Image (cartoon, rainbow, N blue to C red):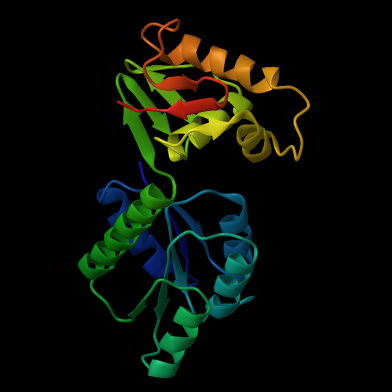
Length: 228
């Protein structure tokens, strides 16, 4: 269930919109002033923030600015009774993703929220792709690996090694390259570090680990990820 944060000081509007959001299948958190809204935006993970501009405490512009400055990149849709172009530009420059002027139809607000979340999901998928090969599925964003639909236990370093190999698909990588890019070493303390982790990945991912299909050995050099 998608979660919305509504930051709005009009209690009547909060009641009306909350009822409409719940009817549309969302869960809703609310805040009646800018300070409370900022605190909730920083503490809670939500899928979209609906933010009024004119509020007691911090106004919506300040809340938007501070959320972005503190690394919260959740989609923000700003609500305001103002219609001036300069206010809209201000909100967008501060990091808001969309702007809706009061009065508005709830159906339009819902449509805009859905569009914002859809774009955010598409952007996240591009930034954090999902890789598939054979019966294996690697979710970079969730740092999870599945084989035949079953989640595999994998250390952070194993996952980082697998991700690096996949991203360099088809390229022969020396052990030094792998150590430098996955472990951060500028020199080679031991090539066994790479060999051991590759062996663990093969045991978990390969249909027949002694005859690997995905993580291939480049004899005398290192390894190569072959995918299919």
